[in-house]
Each structure stands twice: as C-alpha cells, then as structure tokens.
Length: 292
Image (cartoon, rainbow, N blue to C red; front, side, top):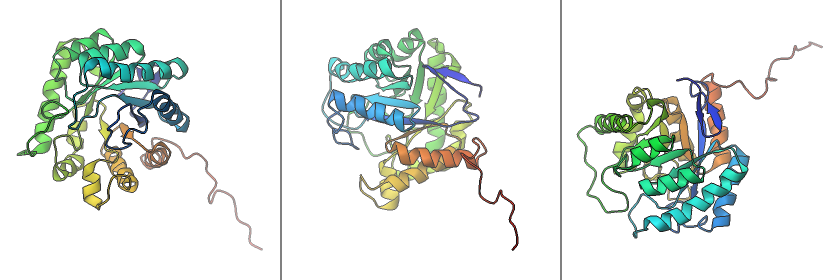
C-alpha cells in the first residue's frame, strides 16, 4: 500500500496504524449511554481525542443495534453540526458513521472525508454519493438493515461468507465510480455474528487483509470481548486492547477505539514490535559500564 491522502492527512499503512476515536451523538449508544449526545459534549469529546493522539474521529448519530426509528433529518441534525465544528478547527480525518446516502451527502458537505457504512452499501445510492463526493468508503460486513431485530446468526464458514460479501461490495463500489484505493474494509466484528463467529473472524482476519485494501477493526468494548472474558460493559478495556493488538498483528491498519490514551500506548507498542516505528527513546543498556 502506498501513501494516501485521506481528508487533510497523509497515511502510509505499511508504516503506521491509524487510531479512530468514537463520537456518538446518540441518546442510546451501547457504550456511553448518551454521555456525548449534547452538541458541545460531542465536539469536546472529538477534540479531546485529537489532543490525545487520535488520527480519525468517527461521528455517528444512529447506533447499529435495534432501537427506535431515527428519521434521516434528525440524523443529519445530530451529525452535521459536530462534523462542521471539528472541521473548522482540526485537520483530523472525520468519518461519518451512517448507512443512509442522504446523511452521507450532508456529512461530506460539512467536512467529512470518509463514510463508514455499517450496512455494506445497503442504500443503493450510497456508492454514488461517495463517488460524487470524492470521499473514502468503509465497506462493513453486516446482514440485513441496521436497527431491527434479526434471527440468530448462522454461517457455514463465517470468514468465507464475509470475504465473499466484501468482494461483491468492492465490485459495486468500483462500478459506481469509487476508485479502489479509496475503499476500506471492515469485517464487522459482532455485527450479526455471535462470539464464536467474531473470534474465528479475528483468527483468520488475514483472509480479509489479503484482499489488498486497508482493514478497519472496530472491536472496542464489543460483546464478543465481554463474553470471552466474562466482563460487563464498562470493564472491557484490557480485553479490548488485547483484541486490538491481535487485529493489528493480523494486518488491520485502522482501529476504532473508545479509550484513546490507553489504545494509543498499546498501538505504539505494537508498531514498535512490528518494526513500523522506532522507540520514542533509546537509553536502556546503551551506556558503557565501568568496573570499580
């Protein structure tokens, strides 16, 4: 992968991992339960994340999980002011988390550079909107529309089915005019998958990375982590960092996380282990010793 310009920043995913912060302008987020629903709190959360070292911020106005209907106009009212406020003062990459083309169009006009589509092009107009906006697109694997109850997850081979889905959506995106180098893939951990599915997907994530596009791992505080280590929401940081590290070692180059300070330390250490980043300093056992 070569260096690419995303928004107002440059990334070389051969030599770095991008850290994406989560900003939920929703009253029913599974993680923060509406703590950043107020506009000023959402903007402050985003800018704090940038100060702590986030490369991207992902702004969402409607959670993926089941819940009450949020009309497109309301979703636009939630995300656009946050995006505009961030864009006015920061060069951070702004990503809008939406499955609706009309929301994506409004967000791109306000300053977003990436559309994070958790439906995997469920809206037939989405690819055209992204192409017209000269934006990047995150194609996520999920099954069926967001916000509705679905049957129990069943796959014969979850990784093969996720990979096939992503290959099909890549073709759709390119046919609509999105350049291949503006596509990012998300395997969709937890989305219409049970814990065994997500663990298998993580173990075999390399089969998604082999498609040759940057892979985004959105794993922070997910239920598959909570069920794996028997920890409720709010007590999953250590598990999230372990899963994030495993995703990076398996080739993910963008990670979507809630706790930016801890995640950045773990990310930097993983980059150093992989030889992607030099140590911040080199002192230990570097000075000659003198016998007395």
